[in-house]
Structure formats: structure tokens, C-alpha cells
Length: 249
Image (cartoon, rainbow, N blue to C red; front, side, top):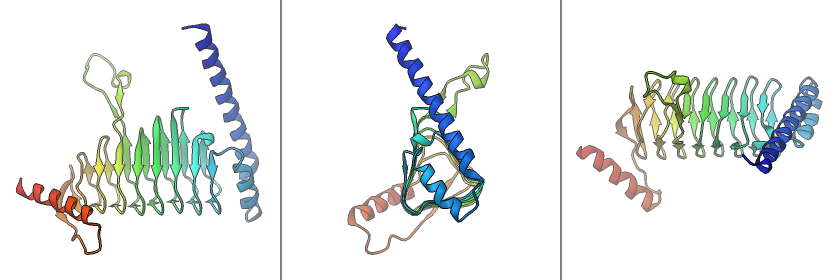
């Protein structure tokens, strides 16, 4: 390692530590101010540390942030007490669009890549989003106690501790207008296509086609939502093609 690269890494570490201390001090000073005055003061203070904070974002007392400089939040956001939102390093970002609602106890942890949550998406109590790239579309509903895990531990070598083996990060995509029931688990590498419904307690290990209803462990498609008139022709064609292909198997 050259002296230049060592200097660069040291500089980045110092900057990161300073930003962490800065946000910790601001959160500590602003957390206990009673509402509604506290809401106004916190909003002004938060704008100095977050990468983006939209208008009328409602962040309740008791929300924990880490890596605020890598967190972007849209307008009319609602974050309830007990939520934890953590960007753990310089290679991770978290983006929440307008009117996202995070209910009590939601835990979002970005280890690398980007976790992005689309407009008007609701995430229910005590749901966990963790790992690498996670993209959740607009108008999604994710019920309580669900888990979306965009990483996986290696375990092929029995002579090494599992925790010491390399992890993989393939990423997860949940497209627009999906509904995940309570206790659903979505594993790394999965795409849940637009308009799909996942039944409570299901474990999604493979891609789910558009407008599907899937249940079970592992999740299997049991029916398809009716494709209604007014949808774009290319969406209808894509959905019908996938449905026919599955039914032919």
C-alpha cells in the first residue's frame, strides 16, 4: 500500500468519525425537545446532517439514525418511534421517496449498495430490511414482522466458521403495487414483479411473475390476479406470457 493510499484512507476515516460525532451530538441535543416546537427545531437541525430531508417529513421521537449523510428522505415522510435506519459505511445509501411510512420498530440496515423505497409505500411494524441492494417500488404494502434480506452467508467450507466465510450480495427487487403479508421472508436474488401478492408467512426464494398470488414455504404461485382493462399493452402481454408459460409446466 502506497503512502498516498494510506493517507487517503486515514483522511476518509477521520472525516467519517467526525460526521458520526456531529450527527450524534445533534440527535442528542434535539431528541428531547417537546413537540410541536421540537418538530420544527429538529427539522431545521436534521437538514444540516442528512443528505436530503423533504418538506413536512414527520420523524417521531425515538427514531435512531446512523450515517445520516448517506440517507435521503422525501416529502411527507412518516417515521414512527422505535425505527432504526442505518447506513453502515461509505459504500451504502438509503433513499426513501415521498410519502413513505415506516411503522414502529422497522429496522433498515444498508451494508453496501442502495436500499430504495418508492413513493407511498408502507412498511409495517418490526419489519427488517438488510444487506445490499434492495429496491421497493411505489405503492407497496409490507405487513408486520416481515424480512427482506439482500445478502447470504457462504457455508461451503465445513472447516471454517460460517461467520468467517464470504457473503454474497445479489440484490432484491419488489416492483410497484405489491402486497406482502405478515411474516413474509424475501431472500437474496429475488424479484417480485408488479402487482403481486405474497401470503402471510411465505418464504420467497425465487422470482415471482407479475400479478401473481404466491403462498407457502417456499413460496409458490397459486393463482394470478385478473389483468384488468386500462393497463398498458406491453404490461398485459408480459403478464399473460409469463402466466401461460407457468401453466404449461
